[in-house]
Image (tube, rainbow, N blue to C red; front, side, top):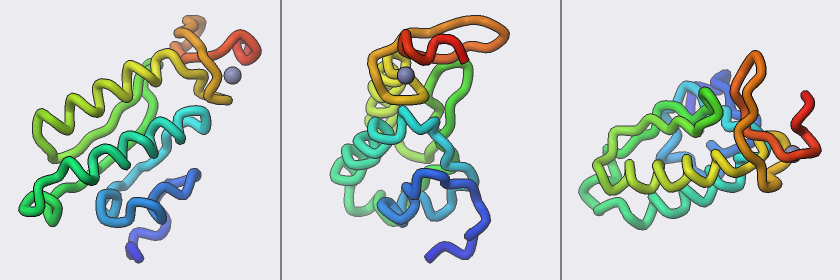
Length: 118
Ligand SMILES: [Zn+2]
């Protein structure tokens, strides 16, 4: 268990990926993006070389300006996976995970038609 028990993790991703997320101070993807974030972390894990696994850490996962941000200390191959997940996120409703698109009002958010008015 992490001793950082008060850090933000509403979706319980730390329990599923304790090593990668043990030094993360913020794991707060919007609810509709949790499945694609979980898939991203599942892809990263086997891609890590054994010598990198000990040191690989993610520090933050969140939404910003309608895109997925995942900050980590991995290499370019990991960044390409993050980019792919970000592309998927930009087509995925943050609220429910249905196909969506970017909406701009007072903010930028990815929403499906049903959740367009929030
Ligand atoms: Zn939706």
